[in-house]
Image (cartoon, rainbow, N blue to C red; front, side, top):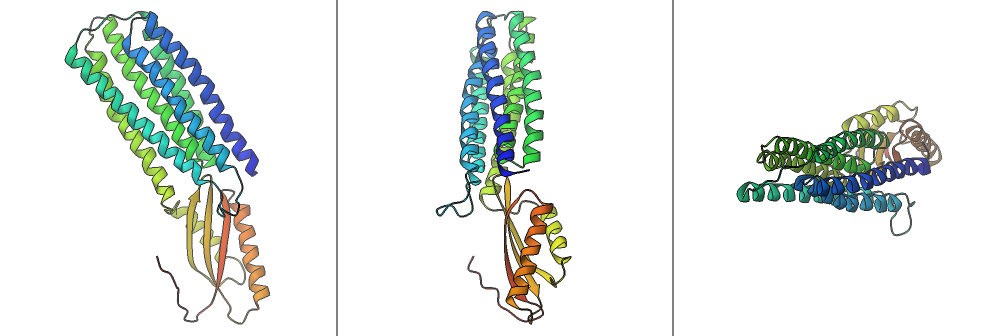
Amino acid sequence: MQRNERFGEAEQVIRIGFLVNALLMTGKILAGYFGRSEAVLADGVESACDFIAIFSTMVALRIGRKPFDEEHPYGHGKAESISAVIVSIIIFGTGAGILYRSARSIILGGHETPGFVAVAAALLTIITKEWLFRYSIRKGARLESPAIIAIARDHRKDALTSIATLIGVTAAFFGFGAMDPIAAGITSLFIFHIGWVTFRSAAHDLMDALPSQELVSAITLLAEGVEGVEHVHEIKARRSGQYVIVDLKLDMDPEMTVKNSHAIATHVKRLIFEKFPNVGDVMIHINPHEEQHEDLIRL
């Protein structure tokens, strides 16, 4: 998949989420108001906050699709991970807000019986948001996009929130008003977990942690299968948005000419690009095979 196709598909996921979220927000606010449900109304207001997450993701994708330049020789891909951190903070904030409102409601009491339209709105939100989560997480995993995966988790957060809303509103509809804040409080704990997972994944990428051992092993196996490569002395990899940047140290015959070793290295790089479409760049360093050499590093 070409670079423009990858980012075009990612932006389509965000646009769909934006439109669906706008419809849900409007519907929940109206249902909460006319259905006399504070929980559904609050859920609608919370959906308005999700536009911040969606907007930050849209901006990140626009920045991330820019090619490398003099100031950013490794590209702009980490904008997606920064966006994922922002989304995680929004998720944490949502969880904290729900926990606060639920605790306040339990302490103060005084619950109004909601109308059936509020129950229907909560149920529709669960179905829609769960579909959005599954659609977005599938696309995000295929594109290996931190921003899309983060926004998918935000959709799952909304689905969980709406489950609590549905339980609470349904219970209140049948006269058990206290179930609304209790269910919301329990759900906030799940939301905190989603926020933590999202933040941890983004921080992992921003700290240049290894993307996956499976990828490293596969690249090593491929490189060592090329004629002229005696051994992969060292391999490092780090994520930059939807792409992975790889650093390779290859051991070759010390008597080989620079021209031949360069040709082999170029062949290795081409094979990596062909087999791993998520690899954005490969830097290859040549070492003389079976000779003592010092690896100079200051980190």
